[in-house]
Image 1 (cartoon, rainbow, N blue to C red):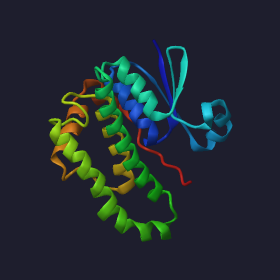
Image 2: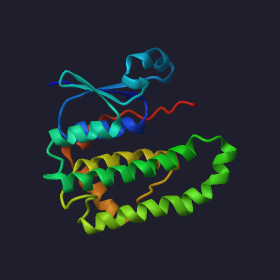
Image 3: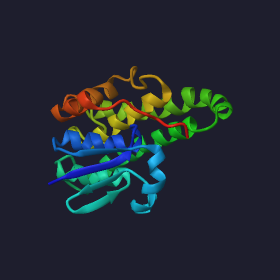
Length: 204
C-alpha cells in the first residue's frame, strides 16, 4: 500500500498527517509543494486546498478527517462511540487553539502587535490549561488513558504553533510534556524527524 501526502514546505496542517503516517510506521511520499507552484496545482486538489492524502486508491482531504481515518487504520481510535467522541473533542480543541494562533500570525505587523498581549496572556493559557487538565486526568494522554490519534495530532500541531509563536508553548505544562514525550518516543516519528526538512514559510 502506498501513501502520498501533498502539502506545502512547512509544518502547518500537513504536519499532523505526516506525524500520523510516521507513527503508523508506514513508508510515505512527502510531497512538499512550493508556494509559487500552488496556483497551478490548486485546481487539481479537492476543494482547492491541502493537505491531501493519496492512499488506498482514494484521495482524502481535510486534516482532521485524514488523521481520524489513519487513526482507525493504525489502531489509534476508540473502542466505542463515547471514546471516539472524547478523541474528536480533544482534536477539535487543539485545532481551535491552532486557529487562534494562526489567525494572529497572518495579520499585518501593526494588528499583530495590538493583539499579541491578549493572545499570549489570555487565549493561549486558557487553552493550554484546559488541555493540561485533560492530560493530567488521562495519565499523559488527551482523550483516553492510552495513546490515540488525538495525541499524535496535538503534538504535531504544537510543533507548528511553537514555530509561529517562537517559543515552546508547553514547556511549563508537565502533563502536556508527557503527551509530547510519548508521541516522540515512537520509532517511526524519530525516523521521520531525523530527515525532516527545515520549514520554508513563504511571505504571504
